[in-house]
Image (cartoon, rainbow, N blue to C red; front, side, top):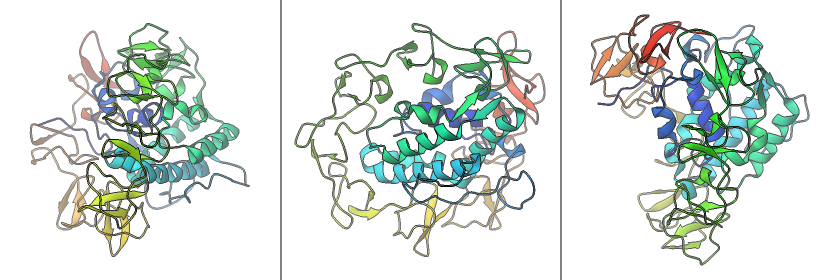
Length: 429
């Protein structure tokens, strides 16, 4: 049984890992097949030492400084006439991103990826993470750049990766330069925050040829390719995923970067997304328009962008609040009364038709489980007050205990290297 994190740590890491996915992995993914390396990375940087989401996040109530639950922005509506404040930006960004995921799912297989950015619990946790950086004075928000990011994302095709959306990466800027003190990755202008046994950490930037686990560790203009920082691969150069290649190249079946295929051209299995250009999909081995809503579909004859194949028929895919048919909602949402609704989290009503994304359904309410209770480790935002290991909930680890991720540690502790293995130590934030 795989180990899983607590309520706000879905891959056994910190919230910052999830935001780094959004910033540095393919927009196909904005989390997906390329996410595994991020989740598996050791506890050597502050992405695993970021403040726990449940200490900052609230989805109801109000008051000064309160982070309210966001609503979906109109797809593509990135033209704002009023001053762009950070909360407006997050609303617009996630609304536009979710619309992108819905539209591009048939090309990119994003059904398993939209869950990270489109469920309110995830989005509010990410929002709170960035607001904490702004409040601490370690991160700056750039409204003008944020506007450009929204325009980039609104116009993005299904072949675009987040590493190509440079303005989105620059909407938040850390104040610490290489070698300067930091507590989290967000505090660094470039690279990541490396935190050891003592606080604070320092910003580290990997240069060309240096070892890396994810693109955000590398200097600007470089990506993490084959375990080391390197310029994006050009046409004909080796690749193992879309983000290895320079935009707009795709990673072909032979493991080399190539120009996306045009209509009628072969689209044998690609590495890291649909090999076809534009809105074409790979249909029976050739690039062509996908099947429309109501038309027949299959694994080899996918739906056109905006549709999903449900029982061999294309249905429209929707986000929260959209009208739907059964099976037609984005991941971690359900079609209830012909409307897509987010699956419930801690404290919300649940049922067999509305399973919990956090905790377990007990007497019709989602409740996180105490130590000793059985857990199955596949709940997106965790089942346990502590963490799930080998099918049983365990209590959070005490200071000094060996750990694999911060999600295992108790309040105000993070998993950091301490003369070798990771241990739960007082958090740096």
